Figure 1 (tube, helix red, strand yellow):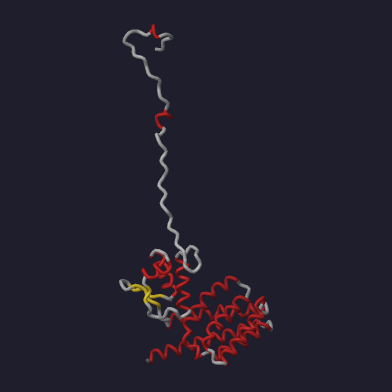
Figure 2 (spheres, helix red, strand yellow):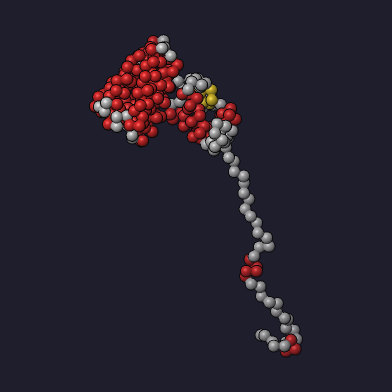
Length: 261
């Protein structure tokens, strides 16, 4: 009951204090911001950009292909993490990726080492390469070399000159460049991306045996380039197929030599 004047309130009836609103009861005394933990950013010493698993894998793959890391070399996670300025997690992931590509061998409790090229894997890789490169040569011939026609002819001349001058140390890079240009001349970006990885591994497999294939290889390269520049798809595809078939035969010979040692 409410009273208009205090004098009307009966004795013994206490005055009620005003009710609090729900908002007032629920409002905290202070606002607490959630804890924000610092984000660890890893950078590569080569380019200063974020260096996740892919960047570490790319750097190690390049070292292996260039011969800076040899088959059997140990790849210690702690040393690699220190080198790239990252934690061991992206290093471990990079090593796992390189194992799937055939560049690294992982043994439990022993760690990672640089792989030696597997004869079976190499033969399978060259078989895949054979079909893709024959297709690339055909497409490149339809384009008559496209925007890289002049560069293709120049690389062939450089390769033949290096071969005649016994500058064998220059030939692996020129060989890889020739096949990369054929893929680029095809105009098919998906095909080019697939061949990019395969060609790098093929170059690694044959890197130490250039003396067994240089003469024939550069004669083949010159004939393939001529067919491409002349716009002869059938001939270019056939010549490339025969060229890669010789690499398959060479792999068989290398395996036979290795088995006899």
